[in-house]
Length: 94
Image (cartoon, rainbow, N blue to C red):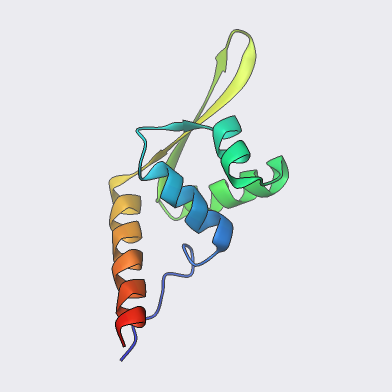
């Protein structure tokens, strides 16, 4: 039987964000925006959904008088991502 895929991670943009964040210590909003070609508004909404799920932490600060948003995957997010990948691989094997 197929396991249900995590609906939070099944979104294309959220999956792309998690794929980027799983491979780095942390990432700035601008980096994520450039890598995904997402609009700032859509990116903000999707990051907030990941944060509400407990998959990422978001830190807002100022750098040289400019706002800076830093995103980092949480241990729960790493576990959810790994589970999602394994579940998807199971789909491909059947």
